Length: 145
Image (cartoon, rainbow, N blue to C red; front, side, top):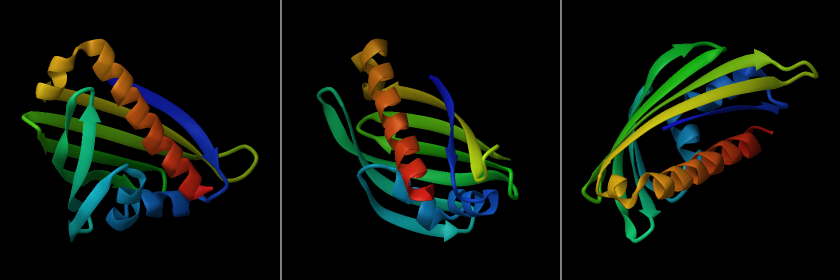
């Protein structure tokens, strides 16, 4: 599944980049997160409650900041396992000066889901994934404005 979009915030590119590349800050944009553990400046883990249809439970997620080009680009990779499922996610963030000041954030996310969660059907999975991505992006936008 592929999702992409963009939004503007009043914060500078440097502030947005700092937020995206700080494990303690970026994990605050994910819903239902518990128990964040920072391993080092580029690697961290978390537990998150997730649910699609009748499938509900906790994912153990390993995240890494795979690429950083300060202050214009960051790539985040994640692998979550649990509920007899796995989720692989890769998200990129391109930061540009916005015309009216602030920062234009262009983001893209690719997700691959397998196991029990994938068995709920593509329409239901796509709807739930899109809702989850929009929630994350909306929270990030709110925290940076």
